[in-house]
Image 1 (tube, rainbow, N blue to C red):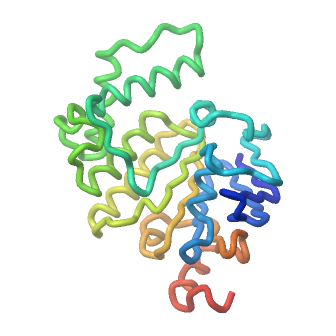
Image 2 (tube, rainbow, N blue to C red):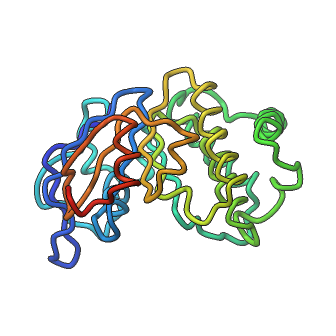
Amino acid sequence: MLEIKNLHVSIDDKPVLNGVDLKINSGEVHAMMGPNGAGKSTLTNVIMGHPKYTITQGDILFNGKSILDLEPHERSLMGLFLAFQHPKEIGGITLEEFLLAAYRAKQKHLHPDNPPVLVFRFKKMLKELMEKFKMEKKFASRYLNQGFSGGEKKKSEMLQMAVLKPSLAIMDETDSGLDVDALKAVCDGIQQVQRDSEKPMGVLMITHYQRILKHLEPDHVHVLKDGKIIQSGGKEFAHELEKNGYENL
């Protein structure tokens, strides 16, 4: 589904990624670990098309098509989703209004001849999803992420993912700043979306910690260091990294 080929990326003429190769198939869960400054968040931003990065070599293919020339919203419409480490607060628009606009845009892309979804039908769908995520009804009427706790912001992003049903969800340090209960709730949310998806959703999980992998079991674990993937393994590899660190890799 996602194939990254020999990806070299720089910012302000400074190399950040130095030849990343990665393949993610439909339904697979991949964990990307590594020391600070290794390029993990850069990789997620480049996949989504952040304009501040310059790709100097390589390609990113999604379902066999290069996406390098596509804008971020076009990549999203194709089925890519990014959950931020620090979700932005946006005043003046409620979570429900934001999700309705995003859902209508996605449906227009998929079914251009169909009329927009009626508001009452969307509200019914959203209510059912919020009940699955154990979110209070008033949550939808609050401004997007404004005044939300860290756990509420991450739950908000899980709800966005459930509404948009992406083919590939990229989670950039979603576990950052979460307590044990919030972490489990977020992982349950990811697994819920995977179960509800018509096609198996792939997951790329960027993390520093092995603890999230206890709740969301990876098929593959990769170590990104000095801008490239230096070693990969199965779920047991994460335990080795927790014990031994990255120094000897």
